[in-house]
Length: 246
View 1: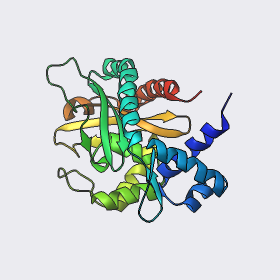
View 2: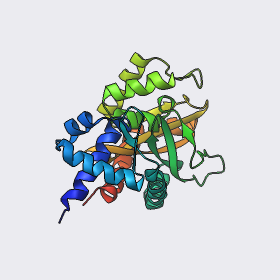
View 3: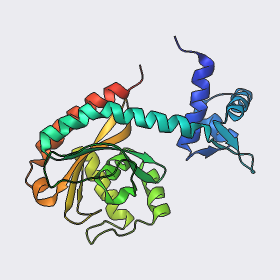
View 4: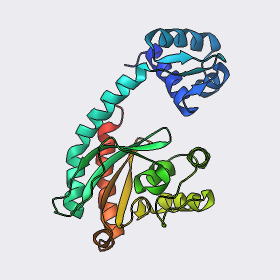
């Protein structure tokens, strides 16, 4: 049985998140369909608990109280992901990773290393820009093109290697390919000699994370990408089912 006041408070927080973490009353109302008076009462409670703050221009923003909850939740997701990442290592023989999008950055939240002596490491907690990584492409492909463009404009899409895609139109075309084939590739775009294949993790109708395998370019290139991606998607689908509400 749902509790209406809780649902409405979560609607308000999600509305703020969908507006980049900050919104005015009218924007929250347009997103939630709630009356202004109801939104104001909910915001007062969220303000008192530190989950929302009010800016000098009277707009509302997500508050620091969410950071603690988010950090704990992120660590728990990393624990839940371990058996699924292990299956991906078994499939590919390469290191498997779980990553999420936080603001304009991709953050690696879990990893299971390859058993091979020569293997790739993406340190858990490492933050990278999305345009040069397979996981980043998957995460942005799951969002509206306007959101991706806004990220690219804010970050400037710096060149990491000679292979990095650094213009918006080419990257939008790349994201279109990711959507159509269901996986993304990083072909030495973040680090020369390292290739990566990533698939989305769906929580219902949203892409909430990306799972990938990465390794030396010659080993990744020797794999059947379409077959590997298909099997990885099945694992990611199972993992997403564990994350999905209800």
